[in-house]
Amino acid sequence: MRQKKYILSEQELPTQWYNIQADMPNKPLPPLNPQTHQPMSADDLSHVFNKECSKQELDTEHAWIDIPEDVLEKYTFYRSTPLVRAYALEEALGTPAHIYFKNESTNPLGSHKINSAIPQCYYCKQEGDTNVTTETGAGQWGAALSYAAKLYGLEAAVYQVKITMQQKPYRSSIMRTFGATVEGSPSMSTRAGKNIITRDPHHPGSLGTAISEAVELATTTPGCKYTLGSVLNHVALHQTIIGLEAEKQMEMAGEYPDQVIACFGGGSNFGGIAFPFLRHNFTGERHTEFIAAEPESCPKLTRGKFEYDFGDEAGYTPLLPMYTLGHDFKPANIHAGGLRYHGAGMIISQLLKDGYLHGEDIPQLESFKAGMLFAQTEGIIPAPESCHAIAATIREALKAKEEGKEKVILFCLSGHGLIDMPSYDSFINGDLQNYSVSDEEIQQFLKDVPKVD
Ligand SMILES: Cc1ncc(COP(=O)(O)O)c(C=O)c1O
Image (cartoon, rainbow, N blue to C red; front, side):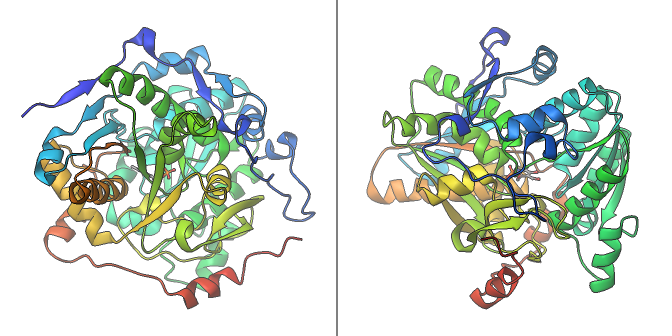
């Protein structure tokens, strides 16, 4: 069995990120101040985030942003990541589709999250900050941020969603190994955490609760900046290194994707692989289809509403224009912790509204079944989040088989699942289940979305 990999040399690595905001036919709406409902400036955002990321967040002019020399140097620790033709998976499916995956699991942290952790910590250091704080769902972002903080001599404090701390205990150990302090969210150490626990003593935590706690810490601690691993425009910007490399590697393979697929939490790995290809759809040069695979139990792209909403449970963040299930939506305890988020990033929300991409809902059991087949064919155990992208890819590959049509599918393998083995054990033992959410439940959560005229 062949397995074909495409790797770029150091000289071929992209030296700029792609800022899709500059090319979007309809720009994303601005984030709003939650009190005044006025658009927020980069200055306003820089009370919470570092200044450079605040600027990048609102930059709708410059399509190409230079990657700082120091960040490029750190990228060479693990980039380029391989683009792989998944012949074994194709054969197992008996599909005429050509399946490629961009393997972001090869760095020692295990996921794409390090691509944004490095620049965020670099800018904090440059601007004289001493501490960083963040939330983490599955723990992949927390692990990446803890390592990047250590690289730049910053102290890191991470709020990890309580339920995933129980599901994936080794991720907390990884963060601590890199020197970070880690606390389960909701915790009793912040006002936001105490309020959530008072309302619901058994709250399992969500990315929304952990974001509230980290933002509170950042805004009450001098020299401390909040960093985010998903959702925001500057995070997706940093992740475009994935798609820019993939574009060159697909060229080496002599193919161009008909479909680009990634799993979807807040949208950073999806945006990262999709945006560089999407720019050719804007010009009409290409007609690639973009599919964001989200969990059936957290269906913001397919069943959420486009509204201004908070990015967190407590309502500390700016109001963001996004497809949302309501900021206090309580996602089921699925094992893809990184996908348990109520909203979609602003750029992706606008692109979805404008018909450039679509969401696909994947039940938990289908995601693990797909992950098992991928592991057994390609020899890589995927993160439960990435299993959603694989499941959507398998659906498309089987459609191609039914239709007897050749097509080229590219998906993002956002991370490996080696720290997620208890989840695989539960699947193998038959202890996992699907969770769906009713229209009534969604309507109930959407009632708390703030009214913006
Ligand atoms: C491996 C992996 N993939 C995907 C995601 C989802 O995040 P995003 O939508 O920002 O890529 C996460 C988040 O924790 C993750 O750990």
